[in-house]
Image 1 (cartoon, rainbow, N blue to C red):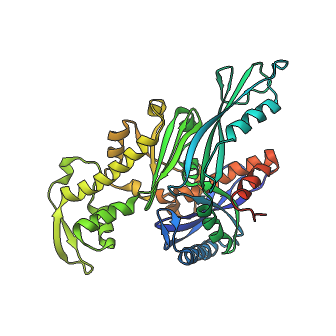
Image 2 (cartoon, one colour):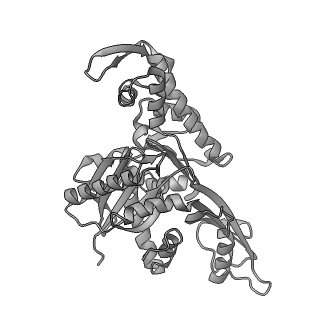
Image 3 (spheres, rainbow, N blue to C red):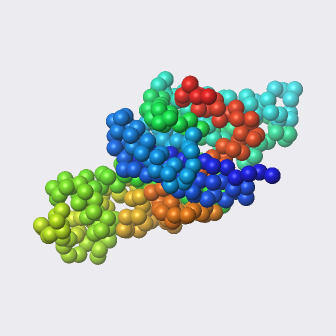
Length: 404
């Protein structure tokens, strides 16, 4: 009989560094035991820029997590993001030998190797290779066509790759805490594990995770990943825009954005003036509410259109479930209306189903990626059972050759 297993997810983000500890139970449900969190320093647009500061923040998050959860943490799953990470699709085609008509595992391996043989920049490494679909003589199959008769076998992959040194910097930071890294996961793929269920993925869904310094996205069509990527723009850029216009300190611009702002672009929500309060709680000026909303709307509209431009042509026609928003900035007032205007699809705030916890704050959308890593760990466990761990270990060693 299977036992419960503890997994730990780590996100070194632009705004926060957090470590989530989760217990995966035999029935597949997840209980969040707790988390350690600290405000990030030395991280910009999802990437480490000041190593000592980033390392100190991660160490602090570890100590808090161990204290809250009363566990000794030795290894983690690590999420990474950044504009250097790219998701691309590639197809491998293999024609069966004339004397063979039945597809067997060897044919599948040949087509898979061809699909994986994607030319990437020399300083990049592979993060993920996901099988999307198979085709046999032009007919699409969602599962392996081994045993069927055919002549031309095709395998479609979604391949994620990124700059080796930037990914290694995050791994190095974790290992010097010191902790082992079980695997490295592109952030939006982890997020999707809690934002979507199988039905959403099968019907087609777009997940947008908008944080402080980056906006990550992943598109599922027919149950498989069709696109993924990162745009180096997030909620902090909105705050900075407000700061540049009003000349108020960044912290108060952030508060003004959260309390008074609206992203929808609806003129009716821009009537009147907004008071600007100083550090002592006293009024020091005011600005037009319409100006504040225009700043917020302009930056978020630009971000969503950047995502739209990166999606495959006509892909949204096959998105039956809708768009799922998550990340701290997704709570911005009016953001759902703006997203609906741009994508013309149902918009949802993602929910974390079949997950429980002592503290309710893990359900806050800003923790979706870290919690999603716990879900992703379940996938790795299943993969280890079917491949004896080989596939997972090789993937990590290609990035960090000193892994066990």
